[in-house]
Length: 166
Image (tube, rainbow, N blue to C red; front, side, top):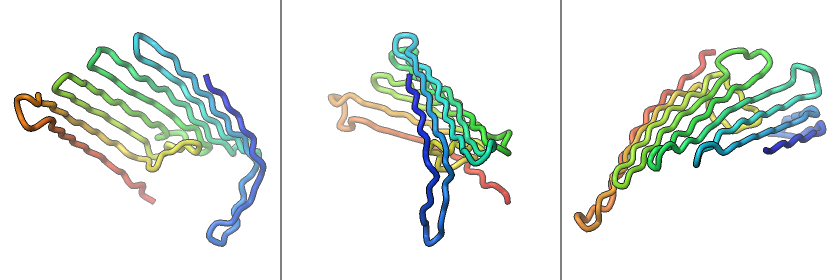
């Protein structure tokens, strides 16, 4: 288990000739991860930024994740998260699911990611929101003795980027 809480002082700095002020705030992170089954894990993370300017100056994130090795060849990785921001009460979730099957000669992979348009992880790293992306791939490894070609890899990716209308 991990728990951290940091209190910052108010500060000011200059960006491109413009003065920017940041009020005093508290940042808290809690992470719990537990091993389950033979070689799998589940986890929970909670993030909180609480500004001291007023009661409505906050951003919170809550997430669940899991990595499950079901057989020697099959792994499933998943996550589901939601953010809580004043004035935003829907379309504020993110999720992902990846399936990976790795055999001796053939490997298959498929995944899906959905980051909704108002997912607002102020304490995390999300470059873009409003994304739905599906991926798939295959890997074929041939025996060196039977051919000069050692391995062949193929990968297909499909992504949808939605732009917000102003």
